[in-house]
Amino acid sequence: MDVSCDPARVLFVEDDTSLREGIASVLAAHEYEVHALSEGSELDRVMRSVAPDLVILDVALRAGPDGFELARTIREASDVPLMFLTAADAAEDRIRGFEFGADDYLVKPFPIAELLARIRALLRRSGRTGSGSITVGDLVVDLAGRRVERAGVEVALTPTEFDLIATLVRSPRRTWSKRDLLVAVWGFADYRAHLVEVHMSSLRRKLEAAGPRLIYTERNGGYVVRA
Image 1 (cartoon, rainbow, N blue to C red):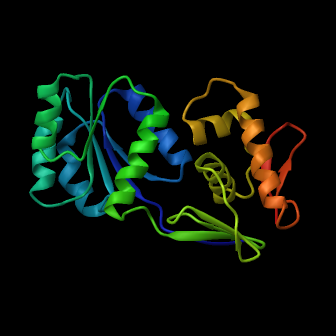
Image 2: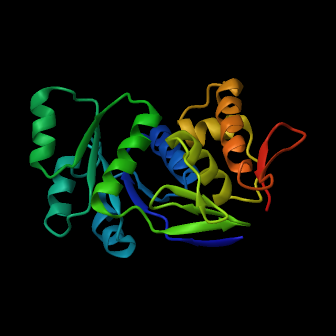
């Protein structure tokens, strides 16, 4: 397997411990490089040392400056894509967020799948997707372009099928349970084995139309990629 990939770096500031750790875990599962802070006192240092591709800010931080003030500081030095997370959903709150330089504004509570979709959209628009491709045997997964080729021929996949194969090839020696794939691809952990099975069956059929099997089912019901 040949891997050439520069993961997108995400700086996340959130003072709710469970939310911060949960979102950081999901982003890490999607191969983002995550730097999570509970408040903004270290923001300047981390901005300089990490050079994030995306910043996500909680607005109502209990300690130190709030998210709006942190955004003001960021915008004085950087045009990095910026998203606010907040429980305030009034129009004036959203307008204020955009006036402070936000590129997106997501109201709590929100589905993790929606957060992931908005992150991908912001990174695509900014050109900061993280470049690279992963090759497994005759399969090439272009992470930035979201394209898959098998033996030099493009394989037409749905967005969900692409997310599945990209998740599998990023960790080719890992056996992924259906529950792990639900979190990594769909953003939720409610056990819906049939959902994974249907999309995996379609993905396998498309990949195996152009070459030998790549995705194997282990005895425990999980999936693994082998060249």
